[in-house]
Image 1 (tube, rainbow, N blue to C red):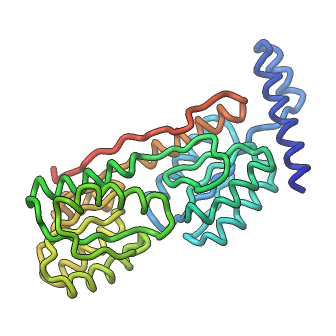
Image 2 (image 1 turned 90 degrees about the horizontal axis):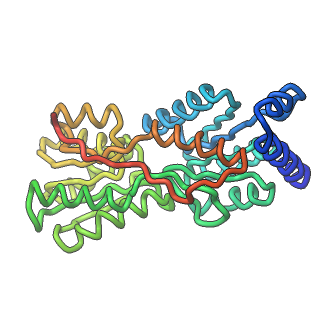
Image 3 (image 1 turned 45 degrees about the horizontal axis):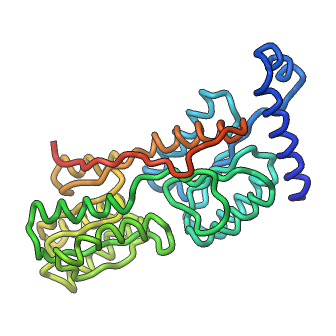
Amino acid sequence: MLKKIALAALIGAALISAAGCGSSDKKADGAASGSKKVTIGFSVSTQNNPFFVTMANSVKAAADKAGVNVKIVDAQNDPAKQSNDIADLLQGNISVLIVNPVDSAAVSNSVLAANKAKIPVITIDRSADKGEVAAHIASNNVKGGEMAAEYIISKLGEGTPVAELEGIPGASATRERGQGFHNIADNKLKVLAKQSADFDRSKGLTVAENILQANPDVKAIFAQNDEMALGAASAAKAANKQIFIIGFDGTDDGIKAVNDGSMAATIAQQPDKMGEIGVETALKLAKGENVDKNIAVDLKLVEKK
């Protein structure tokens, strides 16, 4: 089956390339003769997180605007489901695969399968550990982690006792945001605890409750996404503690919590921009054009207005 897909992909690429070399009349003739329409496959890690809902909606809107097909599948934060979803997409005659990995290591086999099928791969927000990826679209997560630590220092001073809520183990965003935070925090802050809460709000609540109970001196929490930060804010409120909480993503709920004082700040990404750039990059790849290997999307610190 993969050989058939590879052959179909090669034929499709040849047709697109031939059309791209001709005049506008020849392009019209190619369309009239029934040349294959571009279909983008997008595997998103979860739709139970506002950040990725925005990203998926942006992919759909950009594809609709460009007049191309898009198939979006939700992995529900399950690496095994993501693997099965991508296998289905690869058998569904897609032109390009965009994937937002649940787990950067686990998704590698899916990327390798796409490579074998000659289907270009784009990773978005989180990278893949193995396989050939044509383009990776993401914020500078290491820099974002550093921004969070530097903000705590600027407001509370060096030596402040802090805790960290980590994302899904194995996700590149977890590694990179943690790396950036500890680049600064290990030297200038006092890190009392760190624990995974899987980028989930309810888990963020439970983990933060446990951390605050075991470490009453904690004055600040860096959560690697806004969902966990919101959980931590609820835990702090229940414990009647004033905790300086910084999230990551800049979701609507996160920014609202910053403005009402529940969170101190969030390191804002642009998931809508990531989705748009993902589709733009996919269309270039479908036409056989060269694209940048790494495409950075700007971050910004959002404080209370």
